[in-house]
Length: 277
Image (tube, rainbow, N blue to C red; front, top):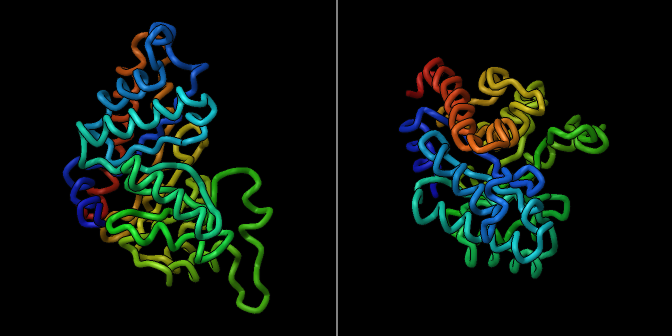
């Protein structure tokens, strides 16, 4: 998927919504638990209910790996279902991998060849050779952790280099931007850190940003749009729990649809104010 294709979808759907498919078996509605694979059945219902406003889906692989073979099968079935029925929607494997070249090649093969994901999240800590294998795949994306939304982000990410005056996350952005262009690299920027979005945009003005933390984690969409939007929108705002667990009973899919449509409506307003639709 190219940046142009992604932006066209954003304009068509009036949305830059990424739905996080963090399926937790403990929260799966009771009436689905007798299915052959409850996780996949849950995901399929969520996808059917939200695909008209979602431009990306982001399964967090940990929620699948925790269930062994059943979970991995559900992940493959979920990606396959999206690719078959909604091929225009980006699929992001939220795997946060990060390892040396030979291992990275195997991860890239697993997620880009076997599973046909469009993008994968990566930790850039091990440097260029740990990211390069993913950049060998045309029209696939490496999404590097920039500045995150968790409580411990400041342990390392904001340490300042006294010589350059740059904080660590800024140096990560500056150096990694030389590895691949804005058509191959995205960055994770937490919605709970809107004050840092200006700094991110100074270093990476044209890249798409994957922004988690809107909704259950307390991030505000208007703050994200004000500081992070660019000429191609440049944002994929992820919402997981507040959409997929808007209800945990029999009407969970309808509740997810309503929550997604509500957020999409707010996104439409931001796109209109920016003159992008």
